[in-house]
Length: 99
Length: 106
Image (cartoon, rainbow over the protein chains, first blue to last red):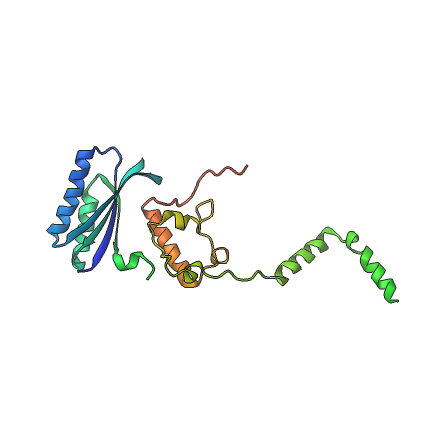
């Protein structure tokens, strides 16, 4: 199973409780797709370089995920359906650095 | 005779027209190319290009948010290519701007 890096941005008006629930939901989604989340790294609220859906800030989350290659599309689909996620990026871990 | 021509050359520069002065400047620029900078990422192998390292990537952008060309960054082709994809990924995540619209010039 290749390792992936997942970054997603959540809209800033989120309270703390639904925020953890959302992270939980993403984790659940990954395990539903027969993968596993190895690490969650919340960057906290950051200012966006340009407005996305009229938001100027967002909560950033970085996740280290293991996922079967065929399940990446499924994860993308589920992230697209979450309205509180305003942007995401899934990358293979061996492509993130230079190498 | 030799002394005559020398005297002429010394008085000649102030008489130059604006046009010919520009020509001289242009010639000088092409005549002395700067020594090529070495690629920073080849020199320092530990330094990895990563879309998450916003502060590193910012060094390779103009103050308008454009990606600096290779002749300004001094990077090798391979690292310049990796740098551009990293910057574009960071832009997608709104870590870096696509443009800076209103820039104060004064």
